[in-house]
Image (tube, rainbow, N blue to C red; front, side):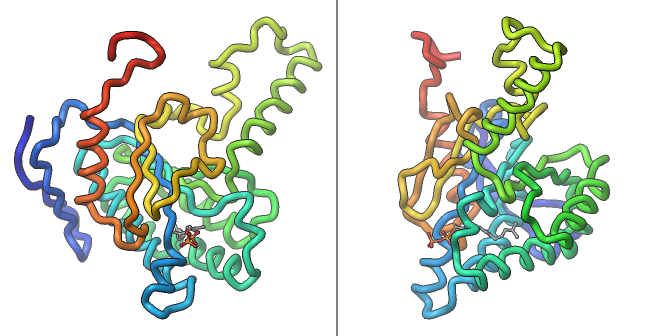
Length: 260
Ligand code: FPP
């Protein structure tokens, strides 16, 4: 068990302080997946428009990624826009696309200062050209960073991801490049958007709903789930520590009888 406070040494304007009291620093989840929910309700509670909540949510993500990095987390996957989110009013969708585009422009320096590598999961189909360009730029500009990976899910759906994987595996089999009996978990994982990343150990959902919402369906098979009623814009490094403490209190048996 370790006790103490970590403070980032980066030049970033607002240092992120993480109170690690009670945490076992040898048992930090390697990959944390986050469903950033509650932005709209957070804004409404303050008499503001929903988009104000998304803007605040984007700020929260920056803080939480830096806090996760201080704690030794290797990957944060954040659900920024789902394949179902296109059903929202066009003004809200456009706002989120603009927000993403701005975020991927303005935060590159900070990602580099903090050694953050940016990746994306999801389909590019239907995304505005400018967003796709910013995504490519963010990947290229941060590809040599060796610190935490920020894996942003944009136009992402777990079922669509599995369908995409099945189709490409079937195409390889039909072309004679892959024998049906050779299709195993590894082959499937190699065809998912998350290829090369470890499976999430912990899934965090703020906002009070107890749903998976089509996020990382294959990958969260054995993830521990932690939820809070706190809306995402109010989520702090203390909540992250609380989630990890809960994770450390669970016995992970992966279907067996003893934890590993
Ligand atoms: C869910 O809250 C949130 C979203 C659908 C979008 C999440 C987007 C962001 C946090 C901002 C964009 C991210 C980046 C990286 C720039 P909700 O709107 O469903 O909230 P509600 O349940 O209260 O309505």
